[in-house]
Length: 231
Image (tube, rainbow, N blue to C red; front, side, top):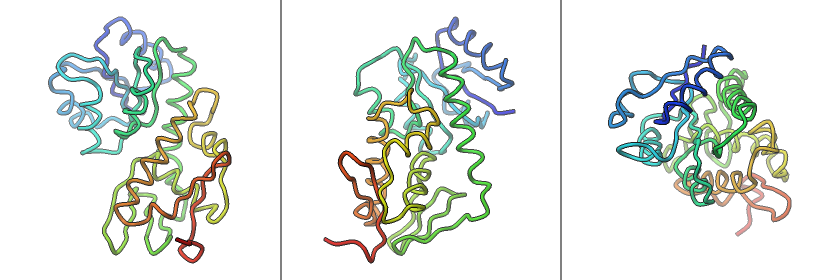
């Protein structure tokens, strides 16, 4: 049974979401003290976090930033705020998805299913390590190790990188990445993918590898091998 931490101060919404998720045999937990979200997260060790932006004490962005310093657990924002910068900010902080309130529960369930299936199933593949441009990619630990150092990626970032490396030197369409990553592209903003790829490239820049991920305007992205890279 997957444990879900629902960080939501609206008691009515919390109760409704919990009841719906209980029907799918998810183990849903709330927050007792909104000044100790991080401590409760560490104690619970959830498999997925659903979090609102507007919360007592500190907002959801604050807690997302703190959780990402400790864990790569999937994080999904649920928010009534509809400004594009909110979604961009959530993705930049390492969230896996952003769902605007009011939402249809079928959409929420579909997204949760997709994220949990992707995060906790694809790592069962026999090949755990992959070399690319002088770096070793560990799909199990979500790390990229290079002579310049080691970085740890989020689940979305490692999955996008994995997909691009599997098709190295070939363009992978935006549509293919979105459908592979989120299962149902009807519920995903095109900007969500852009933010995720930009964040991946920025992290890879720490190892001087970001230049090997190219954007093909109107087509998609590709991961180059070092031998195919030209300044």
